[in-house]
Image (cartoon, rainbow, N blue to C red; front, top):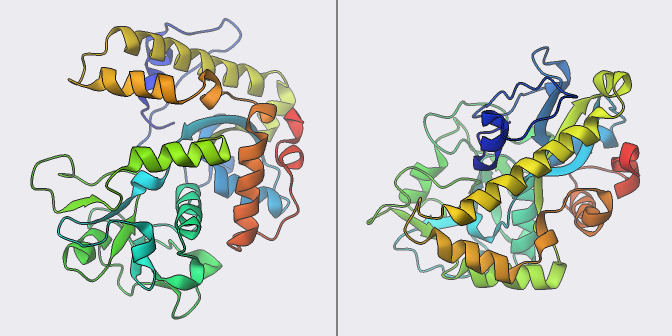
Length: 309
């Protein structure tokens, strides 16, 4: 899994169980093919890639409806600091860069843009690596549409193209180096992302799921109780982490403001695991997979997570 703050109770042994001899492997990038990775029995995996695999009939991984990464996406669209663009609608007819077409996060971000009037046919989508330190790999797959959705030849860094004015915006999961410093070359497109995301939650009732917990099918068959037990362990780690974070809120000067705001703006169940709690969000994601032609599938939440149906 990635090095999430809430994993600290797992890493320190504050949250444990005598049923599992658990080793947590922290990674900056998730395994390319977890199903064949001999090092691991379970892993944080892409919601989109898991869904696409299931649509192809690939059942090597048992997905657990525990969303290890869950996040609003309105904050994931950046532009140049001096850009006049301050609304998603202003990107209509523009050039938008992204580093992975099938990525779960970008799938949700494109849905947010479409809701603002920027559908797939309303912009030019250009795929490349974010920075020069990122590898030059296939980031588009079979989804290219000439003149609409294209790889950039040579994979020049998207952030350099954005800084040079050759792109109007870039979709990305994490902010680039220097973004949080005064004088950053980039800023969020939306002046008030919190208001936009609160409105999104009022409309949909969920925070989008990006990554899930996956367990190898052979391991799950040998230990049928394990997927749920691992999910429960992660839930307990998140609960303990939040409890401590609210007590020790001085890691940044105004973290307490964020904790208060999220506590009052969202129900306690906003990050609940399980199929029932996430059915509307999972259904919406399956709808996006079909609408954005990422997968030709008649999957439902129950058939996507059959072990939990």
